[in-house]
Image 1: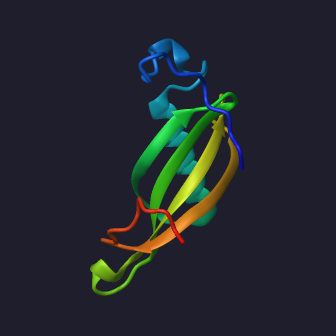
Image 2 (image 1 turned 120 degrees about the vertical axis):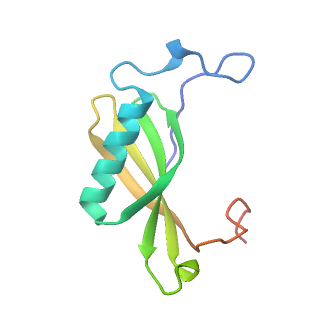
Length: 110
């Protein structure tokens, strides 16, 4: 799913004026996590990234997919959640599943 993010200034850092009108970043994260929990009933472990887009916000959320004993064997997942400028869910999808403590999260898959 191709998304167009808002422009960055010359130093690669977004200024406050680059944020989309409507929701603040914190409000977008709250809306994204609430929508994801409602739809999946999964426990949110944390938010790993978020960025403004032309239509709202793109939030990446880490969730507990499968609880195991011991907890170091848990399966986690990353979900991308798109929220519009009013906090409404536009789309979500799971992008990755992995074991808790996995060290290859940032590496490209082959």
